[in-house]
Image (cartoon, rainbow, N blue to C red; front, side):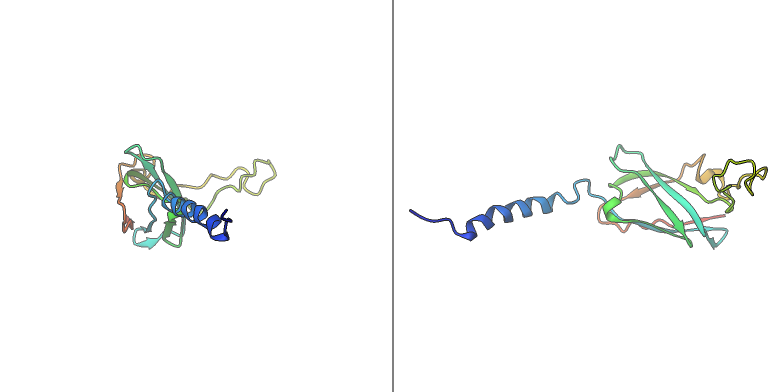
Length: 141
């Protein structure tokens, strides 16, 4: 009669590891990066959104900081076309304090600086491709 050796227990583990390695990115997610400028100046603080148009299972947004944004591969976008929307206010949020004694009480809310053609009325479409590079820069006038 043969005895099990430690190697026999290792083989099924290796097979499982190889199988899982092939499934680590089942949606073929791609890193997406870029720069956003408003009238030639990097947008200090904002948000960029990618809405899937081809039925992709992914869509995401990223924070714009000092003119740059990045969606890493782990949260990335599947290949296909996406509607892009960009938002960047003037830095006055009201701090979310509805109290009547708030220092922001009675003041106007912040104003969106990005034209509606890039957010609420956006027709901007970008295509994410497998293997990239998926670097999308925007210089909004």
